[in-house]
Length: 244
Image 1 (cartoon, rainbow, N blue to C red):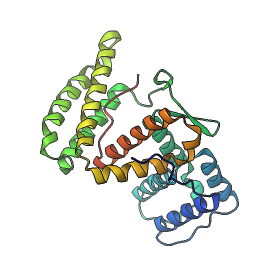
Image 2: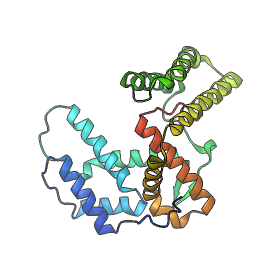
Image 3: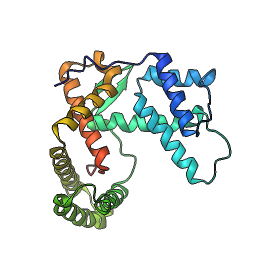
Image 4: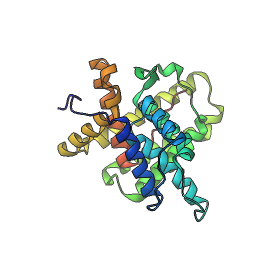
């Protein structure tokens, strides 16, 4: 099993060059140089330890929103993408259960997390994502029973979530966590050995900027969380669990 020692952190020049190349590709070949204030901005991403893949994801998210508004009028500069890059980075650290601290990472305390959406909104999104995953057929028929069961429970919870309080709310959130764990466990079982090795390598590359600042046990747990996130991403699975 990889131990993380082979993953390399790109130099600042390489980091900026790859951001520039990705931006050029998204701009249909129109080259927008990462220089001056743009270079300072992208350098800040690198200094925060934002993995290239996460930065690409933020840039892609901005372009998706830009395209949705109709034909493009001008090439996009990297500066426009920063809010989305930071949002995707925040989502990534939350998925891995980590908090950036002075250029390093520490395990986050779930009690310190604050949900960005209400519980009813969360349930609405999860039901929609599960329905989409089933319609695409990416999970296979062996997931149908779980999706049916989860959808029924989520529908029931959604109808009552606005008025759930106290112990009933805590029990609902625990049930959501159990459903999420079951869904992810099934998805991970479907991953072949070769694919798992590739996912581990990708996870280690994402974590390369933080490898030296993590204890061995923290890194091992974080790598597993990163692999789970990649499995979830590949299957386009929602996160059913909810932090109250």
